[in-house]
Length: 429
Image 1 (cartoon, rainbow, N blue to C red):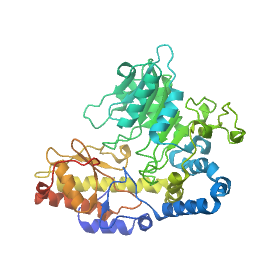
Image 2: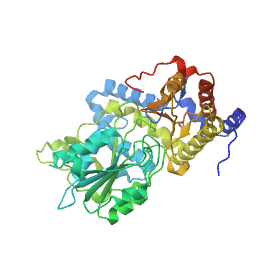
Image 3: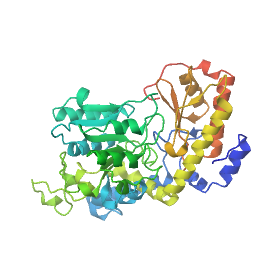
Image 4: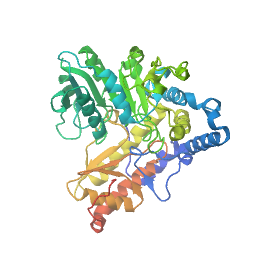
């Protein structure tokens, strides 16, 4: 049972004994801000900056020789970063590769794993998933001559925030060929039971994959032990790889040898890639699902970032994350639960069932409250129609950061400061 106190002195006490507090100084935190948006874009670390600079210098000094003579040879860069990241998600090194983008990787994997046969024609997903994932699934159905309205089964949510795993399992019928689900619901932060869902899918003869963009780098997983068939995740949230940094793709070794249908040159066996044969010789690992040459400069930050994350340790990161989010929940309930504040938490109460952010809502004026919060130097994010997500990062946020954010919210309502802000949203909120 976690224990908290509501006074600021408690935050100071927690910060003094925080074993990860020294990592904060290795990140560039924008001046005068409390950054609570790491679930959308993680901050730049000095380690990532160094790896970008080093690779730029390799390009300058080595030119094309960098493909084999770089400190991490560019020709093997995707594989090497995959190996360094594999322990975070419980993958064998050859099962994970850094490549493409999340949505491109979904297309690549679904095109191979979705093989409609007889009455198994459906893809199972959920109605709370990130829109890009659903767009990709609909496109794959159409490419194979099926109809999203009929053949894409979306698990419904009773409250618009959470899913019940039993509802998912109940829709795993003998008409489903593939299930593709998020590890974490991006709005509420609910962490699904991936092990249980994988077990149930396999019992019913269904292949299953996950989008782990909102958990990778924060929540330890055991992809290989659980038997997950395939997975994707981005690198710019909790992995702090930078905007648009290359993503990751996982394929369980039991599927090595399966034909990648979106085949590309960099998916070829490394030993024969420069034979320039017109016959595709796929790599016998997850690298077979690469399509194009890796974006070395775009991937460069991840080398420094993954070294930093491995130094901190994924278990310690997860434990501090649970502490920070639980402290945030406690303070919201203590300070903001009653009138006139009336904030409600829609994230799971149990820290074991959520990822790294807390989602709060309110019946009125939440967007303008969000704008007022930003004016005080806090960087949250807003999800329409009425959701603020706050994501305290274990590597660069403090307990005092969390305490201050709650005090700012209280002050905004107490003084009605939100009334001076427009209700018009920008393109990115």
